[in-house]
Each structure stands twice: as C-alpha cells, then as structure tokens.
Length: 180
Image 1 (tube, rainbow, N blue to C red):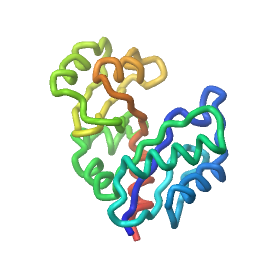
Image 2 (spheres, rainbow, N blue to C red; image 1 turned 120 degrees about the vertical axis):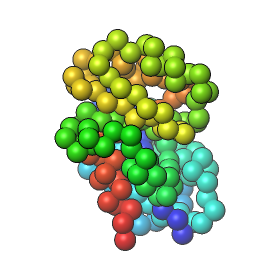
Image 3 (cartoon, helix red, strand yellow; image 1 turned 180 degrees about the vertical axis):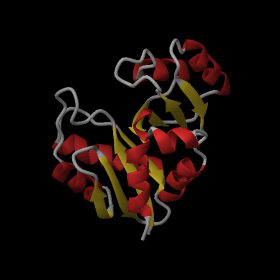
Image 4 (tube, helix red, strand yellow; image 1 turned 45 degrees about the vertical axis):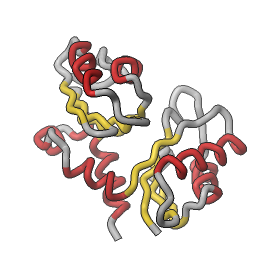
C-alpha cells in the first residue's frame, strides 16, 4: 500500500456542497482505505494499492463522485512522498513560519511549460511572489488573498493548466496525516 493526498477543487464554497461522507465513500469506491479527511474542506489522505498512479486514483474518485454528487468535482492527488517533497522544497520558509495563512501551494494538473512561469510573474500587479515547482506553485500573498488580483483564474490562464490551492496551514495538516 502507498499513501496519497487527495484534494478536491472548489467544493463547499460558492454554493457547491459535498458532504464529507460522500467524499470518503467515493475514495473507498476508487480503492482507497484508511481514509482520513480534514473537516469539510475537500482534503483527505488514503492508502491505495501499490502501483496505483496519482492520475488513475484521481480519475477513479471523480467517476465515483459523479455517480453520487452534482456538480462535477475535480480531483487532484499526490503521493505521500510527493507531498513531503512539496513541504521540504518550500522556497518561502520565513512566510511559512510567520504568515502561513498567506503562503499558498497551488497543486497543478500537469507541468506548465517553463516560459509560462515568466508570463505569470509578469502578470502580477501587487506584492505577491511566485515560485515554480514541478506540478505546483508556491505563492505568497502578503496583503491577503481575497483582494489580490493574482486570482486562480489568472494563474491558470498564464500557466495553461488547472489547479487547486491550499494555504500552508492545510499543507502541513495534510503532511501530519502522512505520519505513521
């Protein structure tokens, strides 16, 4: 068995409601065991059969959710090892320590082309900072996320790939769930 982190995109916000019992049931239908969720946040950790790829597991959860919920929910997964690497590679350790709510990791559906990171940085009009990962971005919102012009839509348009974001507090909470 291997561990995977499961992230849902845009659930329980803006009128899109998914009960966590439905979420856990979909993970189980997709082959997950030892499932732990964090509140009603669309975040979970589960064990899966060794050799199950992130993509295969994510699509299986999406299929299970589509049978039991509306609207269509996007699922992003990372192996436990990949998640721990996201934490270790954080290029903003000071912000992680002093302002973890404004440090965000955006998990991406794929690897953006290298040149797209320059486009994203050029599109920043505030004091935000962005650092590239392989299939994720680290973003600091020093003036807050809610009023920032660096929106999820802008990020996706510049990188050319969809994603879902979690603040550093949630990233670390998921990391703690990976510990035996």
